[in-house]
Amino acid sequence: MTPAVETRLFEIVATELQIPIGSIVRGVSLRKKLGMDSVAAVNIIFAVEEEFGIHVPETELEHVDTVDAILALLDRLAGDAAQQPRRFATETGRSGRPR
Image 1: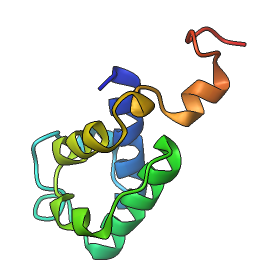
Image 2: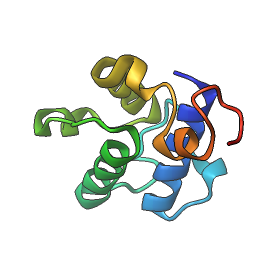
Image 3: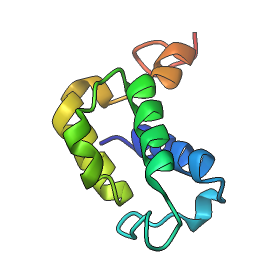
């Protein structure tokens, strides 16, 4: 995963959990340590689907417990398609330079 994807995922998680981005640690349980409930997990997945243009099967929801797990899921489901968040790709050209 690129740094842009990781950064955007941290932003999504922070927004959905209503916590400072600095509170998120890649391998730490979002449920146990940061209070993510099932509604927040679904909202995070919806935001990830929209941002990265992927579909996450419902069977994958149980595996969404850490940022690392979400990154691995993104990598598996999207591969090259998730190399840049849509917002970044829209604001810049494919080369990464501003339009």
